[in-house]
Picture 1 (cartoon, rainbow, N blue to C red):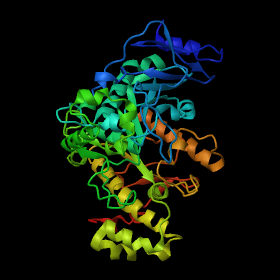
Picture 2 (picture 1 turned 60 degrees about the vertical axis):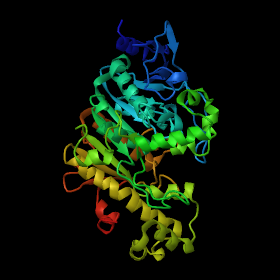
Picture 3 (picture 1 turned 90 degrees about the vertical axis):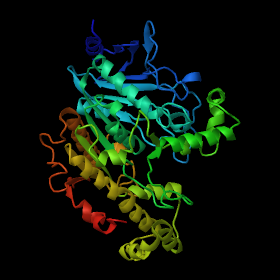
Picture 4 (picture 1 turned 180 degrees about the vertical axis):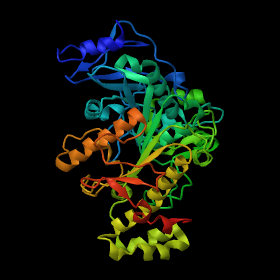
Length: 492
């Protein structure tokens, strides 16, 4: 009996567990009436021992039916001020599948979580997205921080092991989607923040071509640089937030190895995961992806500018108040007296003009003034430029998430994700916006265009630089250029 038939026969209201046959063996998930959830499925071999800092290998086959009713281990990570997760288990390359109980080959959506140093796929509840949108949703783990982005002289794949994991997961989905009622010829790759930058990396990576058919990016970093002080106190200016030359990463890795008392990779691979995790800042040092190797041959910004990327439909955008939450988490309250100092550190001779454009008197606090400056300069300007570059060669639908009630601080970075992976506390107009976004996103996953019957019209970006505002009772075009003062920021 075929795996897809097994799912439909076991996926109804009879209460029996669903079973699917993957190319590594059978897995048994849990049926919940209108959907079935499979968790902790290995998509690659454990990256341990000599496989630490190596390209992912295929998962070994198993016999019998593997239990897939609980998540696999998150990849190694340490807790942060915004995440309590901690793991030291390198056997972590697992994915989770949520599939509706309806029959037929459905679009598949593969989710890449954000951050790059913390997180796991099972934290995202795909029930509403899968059942309301009639799509199969796959969420994945991938190597993070020093385990995903480490580099060393002569080490193949330096700076891109997490990216290679994601590619292996996509390859697994192509091979196994039909076993879960998914269409292997209709895969949408989507992600937020660091995960959206990962999507951009796959768009420009020749090694990822043909593994996905559509792309969605929420608040990605593909074209983002950082002025000094823009993220946290003392930060020096960065030419790119998401990317670093592979040779530079290898040099940093060699320096870290010396600090750990290692003269070669064999020594480093023999260190306990805890030793690497406890190295000061090691998770963040290796967050940027390394370019210049086989995984990511070119700087993605250059590839996008040259049109050197996969020509798949794209849906992309960000939040109206991106940087408010980032200021709160990484800096804390900004004093009025510090505002001109921060502007001078970040923008040098342009600081006086920026003060006139963003006077403290126009904002309830200096924190909000500083956050608006950085939202417009750091997020809105490069996001708009990303739309322009992509739209020269492929259909692009652009959005701005603008639900002021999404958080106490407004529509902040990543606050839109709870509208797709439905937060249980969403009610009223917020839940209505969630329903609408799920329809837009899953229609796009199905057809490459978010427009559908009964939905507010969403023109492509190429039609007059259209950006769709997503807010309760206000789903319509927004003058993004004026809202974020893009003409003022041109050249700054």
